[in-house]
Image (cartoon, rainbow, N blue to C red):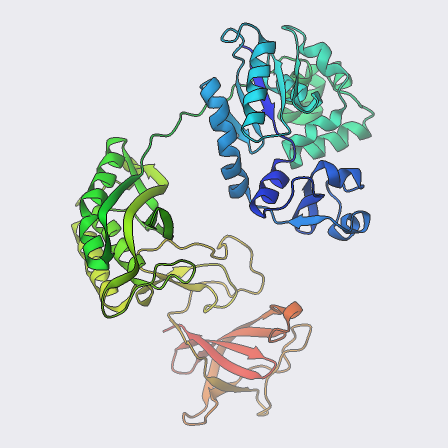
Amino acid sequence: MRVMVVWCPDWSVVAALDEAEQSPRSPAAVLSANVVEVCNGPARSEGVRRGQRRRDAQARCPELVLLPPNPDRDARAFEPVLAIVEDLRPGVAALRPGLLAVRAPGSWYGTETAAAATVCQALVEGGVWDVRIGIADDLFTAEQAARTADVQSWVLVEPGGSAPFLRALPVHVLQGDGSQGRELVSLLQRLGLGTLGDLADLPGDAVEHRLGTYGAAVRRRARGEDRALFAARTPPPELHAEVSFEPPLDSVEAITFSVRTTAERFVTQLAHHQLVATGVRVEAESDGAVCSSRAWLHPRHFGARDLVDRVHWQLQSADVGGSLRARKHSGAVRAPIDRVRFVPEVVEPAAAHGEALWGSASDDLVERGVARVQGMVGFDAVRRPVLQGGRSPAARQALVPWGERAVDLRPVDRPWPGRVPGPAPVRVFATPPAVEVVDDAGRDVGVTDRGVVTGEPRRFRLGDGVLPWQPVTAWAGPWPTDEAWWSGGAGPSARFQVVGADGRAWLLLRAPDGWSLEAGYD
């Protein structure tokens, strides 16, 4: 099997410039954590390099356009490239945005040179200016051949010629494997191995003993013996569903009633492919243009009733960005709607959402009842708590609209230094009341900048003095934190767990402005 690799250099920059409507000839770089992740040719000609810090890159090129990283954007922009190659040769594999592989279609076009020329011409006509192609016996050699090709050109490695072609390449070509590749390149250079040929000449058992399984796999690549396969993608079926209105409808209720059949058809055709949708984009068109578009997420999966409810909520809500705006009392829309479309954005196997042993009728009844409440009070008015990362009990709670999947939450699996260990408190006060905490001498207990307690807590009471002093029978802490100090936060604080004489446990916070009662362990 011969492999063809198509490489579009600096794809992250190309996609970001296109999204920002900037000239593709502008010097630009995609930055991640203030470090240059990818830069284009005009930027490299000014001295900008990958791995430079933002200040150094701007010093070398003051006109440098700084762009944010966005893997989803890069993948979306690369989809038309995949489609163009897929029309010429089915079985395309997207290795990453800007790089794809396919079985070399030489027999389809007479010769491999003719096949490469055909693919290159189709991509250039499709608007991809910088495209380079490599063809070889294996995936790794084909990729390196594409990286040595000129703009709108190709390099063909003859059958059986992978090892001689790879010998002269420097070891830094392995940096494309990410952090693992960069670490290996650094080690090889320190060992005095400058080319892939130097690595290929080493004994296999010695390489595996010194560099491990990954090093042994890289050695096989350098010798042209790697036969790694790539998974060709299957073109996804057309799963969207839409309904047109003639004449256009200007009533929310009429539109909602008219999309019921389409919603049922949408769910049925997903079930035909043994799929369910957990993310759906609802689009409404007026006069041939999309005037309202919103992506909806579901904690389980969408049914026909759920989709109809989402259409109703979307058309009733005020869409500031578009021309569609609901009138609160009349139920009419500003612009008549001539088309509604359901586009699945996240689909999952139906088997992963099978019913439990006793079915899911009770869950359906709950969701149906909550949906009716949302229809009366509004989609965002009914919320459910979701756990997220944080140091305080209040920070670990997030409220998400019912029926919407939780997104943009702080990760739970991070260390979160200063977080109080479990078990979690039962009650968390929305507005923590002020309390007083004193030692044996009646002095206020504080915490120094080094986290040292100025006295042992002996008594505490609410700050208003309504309740009497409560003796402290046991306490633990402090757990010091200094959150958001770079943005003028509250300053250093510390948390204590205390147990009163009545046996109840509390979580207290000592901040620069005094004590407060955060939560209770009832």
